[in-house]
Length: 253
Picture 1 (cartoon, one colour):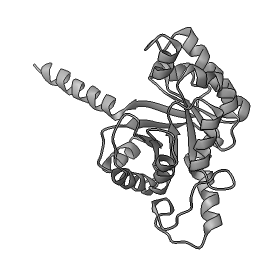
Picture 2 (tube, helix red, strand yellow; picture 1 turned 180 degrees about the vertical axis):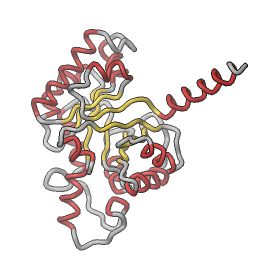
Picture 3 (cartoon, helix red, strand yellow; picture 1 turned 90 degrees about the vertical axis):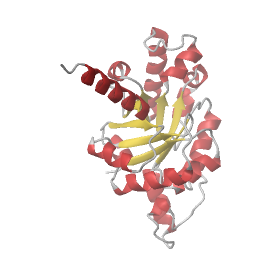
């Protein structure tokens, strides 16, 4: 079942963000841990499209969703990620309706968007042309277009952003949101919690999925609202693992 189908069926989907993992075997590790997806971070990391292609097609073969946080809003970043096999794209700092509409324009095929059609690429498992309409319709059902909400302006505009046809998920970036609200790093500040709740309510109002990339405390706070759940990064996981090895080994008698 595709990620979007799971969410439409009322299920949560769970994943993490990757910044330093370059070997496609990371997809096996995530799948073995029963994650639903991994998201590769090109806002704060430097993956090449060659590396992303190899990891997206590995994830697709394993039925593990591969998504990309693009470095910025552009046709080049979004459409190329889709053609490399990504099942979704997240655009950071999505503040306005116009930006949300542009996400849809480059991630979805007509009639929802203006994504260019290319057959025989990773997103079609290298199957050639001849089934344009079928491929386009399947692509629009599969692709997850995500507006990342990270500023006060985005929160204020979240009702209109959630109303944009073709936007599937509004996902909170709590760290940047706390900075925008004036209390960097205080993620449980009542003002931040109210802002997150406001976005969740607008997702529900417009039938969109609510997402959050956060630690357990914040995820638990909004568990009833969440569909798209993301926690930690590969650097967090590796750091915690290294620290555990160090502590355990030094405690050996």
